[in-house]
Length: 115
Length: 219
Image 1 (spheres, rainbow over the protein chains, first blue to last red):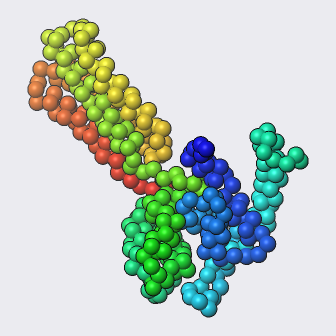
Image 2 (image 1 turned 90 degrees about the vertical axis):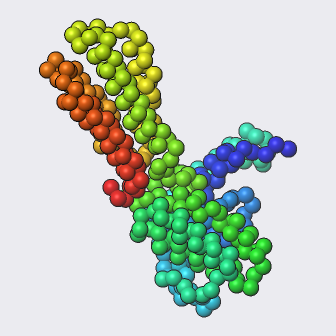
């Protein structure tokens, strides 16, 4: 079975990764390593975990996420991330688009359940 | 904010490589990234862990240069590529090729062409033998290619690019002064003008190389 080209996969990942981060902290705040680790668990989603840190930094600068330092019993303080209202809006917009997109692609590919 | 906890030697080694890689970033952003990655290594590895396990963590983290490349310098508008593996281009192959061609693509053309014109026309007429056109064409195309490479690069500001574009025409203008009847037959001033013309080209090359090494945050 031929696998998807590297460039195509990379493009797909680039597009959705930041929204996956936003979705992860939607229900509760998480600290950097938690986010990176959890995304890393999802098969094929992250190839270079390290590049998530610059992304987190960028999301902070864009005002999409807020961070708080909290003491940790097991080591150095941890930086906890949570969504801002702007982040929540952005996530909501993406979810709409993504659902529509996914359904359309699945339908055309004939691999999905009919909506 | 750096921790004083000990790291597995392989993890510590990775951090050293990262410290080298972050030199490509503005000073303010270096420490932040190092702290984050160090914290990651502290969470994901232990001093007593097997080498294989630590290597696998480092593998998943990725190449330090790739991580640094994913960091957009402050002041730049975030692009959709920010989450990916785009390496911030400074003095890359395109930049060096542009500098070389802009500098040398034009100089031989200008100087050789003008020198031949002066020699072949005996210093009086303005006859330009066709052969000179052909000789000049090659390097001139090189210069134009160099200009295209320079303008499509993101390593330079518009001002830098304008300077780079004007360098060779200015040099040509200087060199053409050597053809003025009063100066043409005086080797001293003529050589001086040609030398100045060459200096303008070379100086512009150095300027472009220097500017390409600066990050956007430096202005």
